[in-house]
Image 1 (spheres, rainbow, N blue to C red):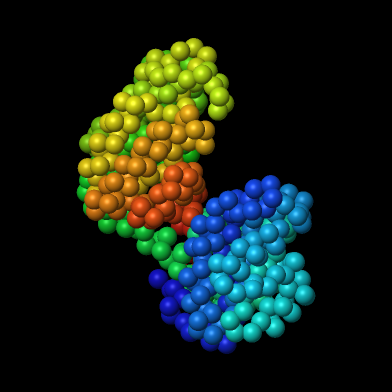
Image 2 (cartoon, rainbow, N blue to C red):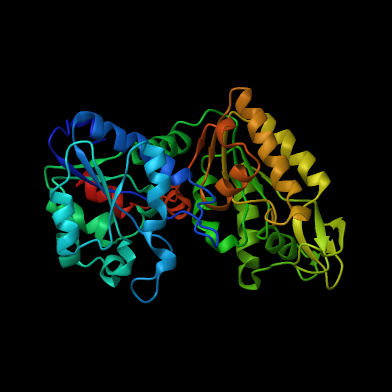
Length: 396
């Protein structure tokens, strides 16, 4: 793997694609800085070599060009704190002024460019836009695993302008190594925990994992599609009516491949999708009319935990319920605690980005699992066996 360890950055400007798409509150305070922290080691290695750093990222989904809400200027103060130096800022990413600032950087200095997505050319993968960005640096480093599955100008197209000077940053390399470990070097028993809303979002991953795992735990909204497919009454619970046959097929495939497929037997149910809803517990296949399942129930928690605690490799992608609401967080929290306990006992645990990473962070377990991925969709696609454009661009 072509990482930044292959090069000394002395006197060089390193143009780094980072993923600083972090959540901000209404006062522009960063509520989760994991992605920013993930880039620090790459930046520090370059500065230590005697290079300078130009950072480019997107933030949110601006629709109509520059928008204050999505400006990366809101990150400068915290980034300066993380790096223990004053980060400079360019209020555009391809302007003459931005280019001048990049060329005037001294060794040890850092410049953050304005949001790439203020230009529609970024998401279109525009070659001319990528070329303008490329002028900002002498070496290109991709450290943005969270966007590696996108064929955007700054992730996939720009690398062609650095044929002999393109590398993976430490975060990107670490993400790929940990994903490979789970996919191709998993110690048995290997358990995958799949949650989230829809079977359709995870179908390719589930099918691939059925060839690799010993146990597959299914929770979250997608579990009710399985319950209804088997003839259960699920009330107003989330369901994909067009995926009922698919759910039955997956149950059969698991049997054929001798994979222990665990579906919830009970749920915490509510009469409304609201934090103050009335709640009850019910069998997963017998939910009252007008009520919906919003978390796995106590019996399911008990069964799932037993399997998790016996596992040597754990992949977790997707919560067990609506953990954002306190009344429906217990299932996800209990599974997180079991994953932590298994990890302490020697298991390797990979938390698959997105909502799973948010849940682990909410419960304060970031440092108690083996690895928390910064890329939800990217990790999903990589594990499905797809070639990620951002990875291919460096390897080509």
